Image (spheres, rainbow, N blue to C red):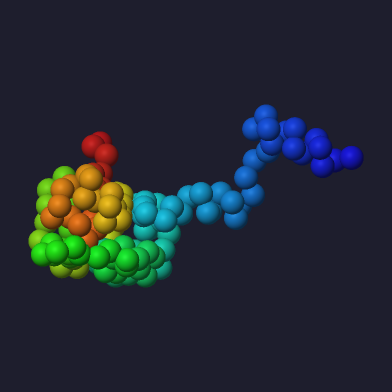
Length: 133
């Protein structure tokens, strides 16, 4: 019987992932890598267009987030290389090829990471730095 052997090999870590499993692992829900950007048909567009086409939930207003009392739900905050930027318009000014890593923080995680002004979520971008030759 081959099935128990497959389970035993999987338990030992000897089974490799199928291409579809590897692709699913590579594409994370809250992250876009440079590799994914360069493999996409949107690589020649601005970063806003890439995000809108690959991970549209990064740009959507948070669902299910309610304000209590007089608190205000802020728009998504954008950080580029650790510095707070002007907002989603900053993504329209950046070429997609210039991004190394784009991460999305949902509202609860962004508040914990960046404070109460990030209660609408955050997009954190690390710029690509070409290797020195």
